[in-house]
Image 1 (cartoon, rainbow, N blue to C red):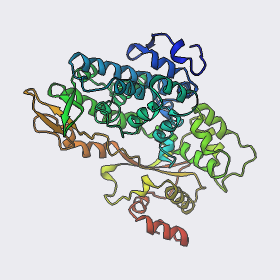
Image 2: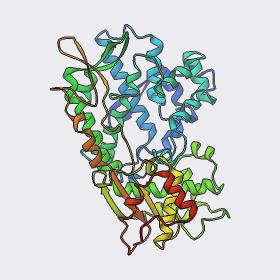
Image 3: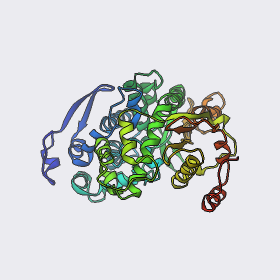
Length: 447
């Protein structure tokens, strides 16, 4: 696409363009979308993979955030068209319709390289970074030209779930179109059958429902089976793709490499937020005379191992249903403490620091549901995590499904003769007790 100067974007952009897409076939982009698309902030997404390190397991999983952004935009246009045909958009201002299309296109512009791994590692939310970018540089100028001086704020509110727009649910919620695209696209590109969603039925079942004096996105009773297909596809993709053991091993190694490089001043956090996948890997691979981690794997060694697919192996691998019920939240919520625990455990087991990594990924809202349900007779009910008798059964077993998909793993760089199941007991210790033992130099594992 040709580049235009700021201030000339809308005047020079064509009325529309069509992009070929392997999932949705033809994606039609309107003038506003084309003006935003041709900016460095959005073009960066061409070089940020959608699924991080999943390509090490599924070679086809090299699709990008750029493709996903186009797909989310496409589905948003289709959803608005469906609502318009039924006369349900009369209560929605034209500005809100434009804003929701742009929010779908731009919702991932703040994303770090390699999927969500760096947010797991304690870095700031990509949504906050993305909203800041909406008002900066060439993209900010384009958005103000498209919708006025407050338009970046309007789009940002949709992305951060703070909008009062009736269309907020299309961007975030049980039925958000981002989810429909990434599940369908990820399954296609990975070559797996798990992400099958009845997309056409689901889009045709969307409705605007008045609840508590305001309108919000809901689903018609006839679309409940399609909604269930969406939720089960999400469960299957987490269990088989996103949380695959080799994907998680690479993710844990990458998180440790980046955290170590940042801690030693080799990479600035600001540079990470602007990097691409390959750009960040190149930064990690450069040793540049920086001090390495004492007695252990430095960040460049970890990066080189990931690139060569020399991944850490599982020493412990349990479904969450078999993990101790008292496992503490610090294991997933406190990256700094988890790193300290990993290194202390490594020393106790005769390993070098960085050669033992803990993994207990979380996605508590995996099968969460909370949206209005329009019944065939016109009455309105609400679907929640408790389901609804005769309507939606999947949420009632959501916790059991979640615990079967989620796994507690210990990855090691080399075999360990000693049993590591004692680490499970460490995970049950309150954070304050763990910190006390670390500060006093007391062992974490029972003798």
